[in-house]
Each structure stands twice: as structure tokens, then as C-alpha cells.
Image (cartoon, rainbow, N blue to C red; front, side, top):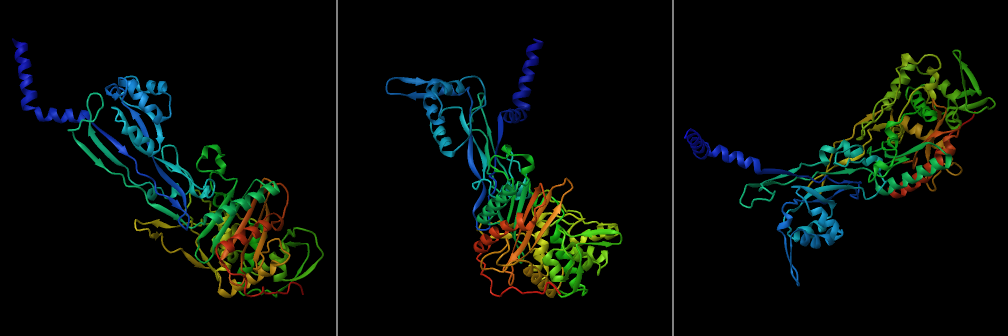
Length: 557
């Protein structure tokens, strides 16, 4: 009697006084929430050509407890359950009937059948209306151009998380917002039609528009790969930069990788050497020394120097790259001959502190701020640390380190009337109406006067013979400078940076060859690649040929 009274009291409590709370608890136990993943936005080149995209895919799954409810009406006899489901589903999955039957048999409430199938496969599977068969939307990231721009684009992991490149830098814009669906399910996992069902749709990510041109990027990668292979170097980079707008039109690496299969490549090849690897610029650094001396009014292109093969400065022996008789050179001749001794003589008209300030003004020793992860700022030590030999070697591009994009941007200062424009790889974010929202105006810094910039352009033009130089471009006056420097491991870096047409410059191109086993000048290793890439870039960008002949300067006196 006591037990009956206790059970009766409990029944009254559950069904009467506490009914609503118990009902809510039951609903909560049978309610399921599933995520609806958002599709990542596209990454395109400057013309809208897709370089990275997310395509809609589906993961097919099965609740094995429900499949046996399936009925199939054949012409000969009624087939039911798992066997019937396997016969109908096998052709859709591309499996044998036996394999399909095995996958549908068991007591698992949830099991994947086939992942990342196309929408057509998903539609065909669900149209069979087999109890327990369902599909979840997922996204597959693809890179239609393969390795073209791979080091700029980066890649995502198997779970869709951004791991490198633009994918990582602009992840918040590209990723979008996942949606969700909530429903009540029965004991065997089936959706209860009359139960609670709510769906919040996913909001797909925004498209990111790059400044690069796909065709020019492809060419840059081909050119730098050819130069690296030709000279047996460890790697290389090529940069194509618009000095007026700051837009990076190509940023190529070799070795590179295909972002569709990043795991198949070496980890050291998955980044951007153009911004992460630093090196001494070598003779291209002479441009900054001469620009500073001209801007400060200490020298002119006609200034005269007696230049021996080697010379002692405050107990430090400085020599040129190759033995030669004593020369009588103008400043223009010092640059044309790329003389270390002559450049140090020019640099001694300035204090180390002034030269240091100019190097910093050209953007050296600081990150460019380009929209990619893992950029190195390089190293430019303060002038009070330029002790001993460093005081003199900094005049001709040794004793400090830079990255490739920094150097191209710095040299681009002369092409842009003395104003350095911060490099950018991203034009903006594409809006729903198709317009592109820019990231803002690029930062600009006047480094030298218009007059000094024009003088340095003339010096650079004078350095490149438009008929015989390996850097020559048919129909265009080329202004440029070679660079070669030894690295700590004993290898060499060779480079050529220049622009064309010299009389109205806009496109600046830099080619850098790293890890040369022996001394090979920038004129041999990098200049031919510069010529090929610049020729393509000028045509690609529709730049008119030279209108004014190059300025001839006196090199000797």
C-alpha cells in the first residue's frame, strides 16, 4: 500500500504539477542542431579571373537503423529493406551492390557513406527517398590556376581553416558565417515532421580582389624558374610593381607549390621568399648612396673621382669586384662601372647618420606592410653601430639586409618622381553589387626631390646600353642596376632591378636569384630574365614604347 501510494504521488507530480518541465526536458533530449557551413569567398586577380574558389559539395550519410523501412517495387517481385536500398543506391555511389549493402547494414545511428560528392550525386541519392539517407553541405576549396599565384594565395587545411597567404590574411572576410538547422528526431534518428524545426541559413564569405594579373604572374613564375634552373641556384623571386599606384602586378617564387595539394611540397616552399627571405642588396644599394649625396647638394653626375682598384679608408681596405688600372671617372662613370671604391668616395661627402636616414626613408629596415603574413623587415643597424668596415660597405649595399619587395619599392621611388608608394597586393573586397570596396589610399612618402629622382633615372638609364645590354628591351629605353652580394654560407645572390620606358617610367621589375654556388654577376644571372619579363609586362600592361632617347652622360674625364 505504501509503495502504491508513493508511485501514485509521483505520477501526479510528473503528469500534473511538473508536466511542462518534463516536456521541455524531453524535447531537449530529442533536439539536434547541425551546422550549415558557409562557402568561402573567391580570390580573384585584378580582372576578376578566379584564382581560389569554394565549390558546393555534400557528405552523404546513413542512419542504418532506418534503411530496413525502404520498399522497392520491381516488375517481378517486391524487394524490401537493405537489399532493395543497396540495389538502387549502388549505381549512384558508383559502388558494387555488395559494398553498398555492407555500408547500409548495421545498428549505427550515423555513418558517412561518401564525402565531398557533387550536388548531382546528392540529388540523385536523396531522390530515392531511402529512409535514413541524408546529406550535409560542405565546401571544397579549389585553385583553378594551379600553382599560378600559389605563394600569394596560400591554402586551407582539410577542415577549411586558413593556413597561409591571402587565405590567412583575409580569413575574416573570406570565411563568412556558418548557419545551422535544428530539429527533433525520433528514437531511430528520423526527423519528426510535427516537431520543432528551425533553420538559419549560412552567409557565404566575401570575394577578395588582388592587384596581380594572372597572365603576368604566370610569366613571372616561368621566367624566374628558368633562370634558377639555368644557373643551378637554390631559388629565386621576381617582382613586378607599379611605382605610381603601389600595386604589385606579380610576385613570383621558385620553387613554388600548387595550393590544391600543398602537402606534396616542401614546407620551405609554401611561403613567400620575396618578403620573408632577406639578403644584402649589393650594388643596387649604390643608388641610394648617390641619391642621398645628390639630394644633399654634395655631388653632381659630373663630379670627378680618381678610382684605383683598391683603396684604404681609415685603415679599411676597400676594393672593386675585379682588378683594373686606375680610372678617372665621373659620378655617372662610377655607377656605370659599379665601382665600390668610387662609391665610398662619394659616400664620404655625407655623415653616416645622414646616409642611415636616407636608407630608412627608402623603406629599408622596415616592413612594407604588404597584405601577406610572415614578412621580414630586414636589418639596417643605426649609424652609431657602423663601426670599422661597415661604415664603408653600407655605401655599396653590404652590411644591411633587405627583402626583394622592399628593394623594388625603394628603386621605384626614382620611377615615381621621388615618392615611394607602399606596395599592395589587394585591390579590395567585392561588394554584392559587383563593385570593389578599396582598402584605402596607399601610403606615400616623398624621399627625394623631383630633380634628384630625374637625375638618378638618367644615371640608371646611362648604365644600361639599350642595344647591347642583357637587360635591354626592344623599343624601350631601360634604366636599371645590377646587384651581386655574398651570403654568410658562401653562396651568392644576384639581382637586376629596373624600369622602362626610362623617359616615362611606371612598371618596375626586379629579378633575384638566390643561392648561386659561385660569383655570377647580376648582369649574367638576372638581367636576361629581367629583359624577358619586362618585355612581357610592358605588352601586358599596354605601355607605349619609348618616346625620348636615353640621356647620354660623361663617364670619364
